[in-house]
Length: 375
Image 1 (cartoon, rainbow, N blue to C red):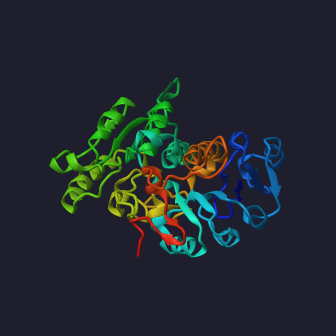
Image 2 (image 1 turned 180 degrees about the vertical axis):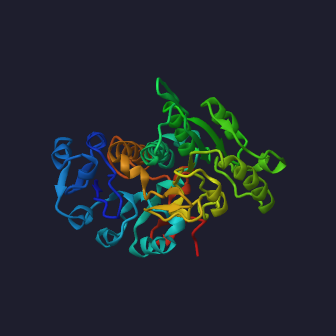
Image 3 (image 1 turned 30 degrees about the horizontal axis):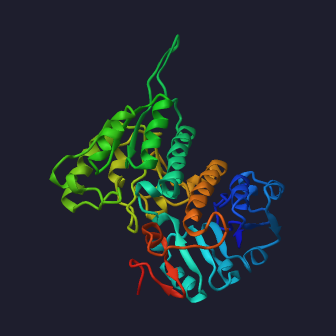
C-alpha cells in the first residue's frame, strides 16, 4: 500500500501532514510513503530528512498522488483532487461546513474523504483530536502576537524610575485555545480574566489563575453539547452577557477572542461600541476571524486600527508555529491511520461502523454518507 503526503499550496499554510518521525513509523507498518517535493520545507523538514526516514520524493502532486491508496494533507485539496485515483482515501482538515460543494466533488471523483475536524471528543479519540492540538498552539501564539503588538510590558516591574503596572488580559472563550492563552498570559505576568458560556469552564479558568467573568443563570446549565463544544445562546442571554463584558472590557489592555461554534458563524462578542470604550493602544487578537470574527470590524489576515485599538485577525495562526504544529498534526494523523490500516500487513482494514470513522467519513464509494451533509 502507498501513502502520499502532498505539499500545501493554500495561502498562509506552512504545515505538512507527516514528519520524518511519522514516516519512519509508517514504514515500520510495511507501507510505502511518497512525499511531494519540498512538502515539509516551510516547517523545516527537508526532502533529505524524509528520504532518510524511508520515503521517496515525487516532483509534483500528480506523481505523488496518482497511484496512492491514501493521500494525507493538512487542509483540503484544490486541484490535487483530480490527480487521485478512484477509491483513494483522503485524510485532512477538510472544513466541510465551509466547503460543502467540495464534498460532492470528492464523491463524484470516487474518493473516500475523512475530515479530521469531525473527530468526536471521546477518550479513545483524544490522540487524534486535531482541533485540540492546533488550537493549543494557536492560543499560545495569540498571546505572543499580542505582546508584540502591545506598546507596554506584560508583567509588573518595580524600578528606581517607578512602577510598571501589569497588563490586563481578557480571554473570550475558554476552550483549548483560550485556556492556553490564559496560561501563557499568566506566565508573562499579566492579570488575566476570561469568559465563556459553559459553566464547566469556570473551574478550569480559575485553576490557571484567571478570574471568571460570566452571567450565571438557568440557561448556562445547558450551554455545552455532548461533544464538549459551546452551544449558541439565546438573544436574551447574549444581551445580558454583552452588558457584563461591556463593563469588563473598559479595563482591559488586551482582548483575545477564541469563541467558535462548529458549523456556525462565530458569535459577535466585541462590538464597535465596546471598542470605543477601550484604552488607546489596546490590542484585540481575533482568532475567530476565519468564521466571521468575534470582534466587529476585524478583517481576516490584517491588522486594523479602530478607535485607537489595534484589531489583529490572523489567518491560520497555528501555521505560524509550523514546526510544532506539523509535528502534533502528523501524530494525530498517524493515530487516525491505525483505525484504517492493519499494522501487521500494512493493508486497508476499515470498520465503517466504528464511531470515529462514522463521525469523520464524508464520502464512500461515490456517495456522500455523512448525515450532516447528505443532500
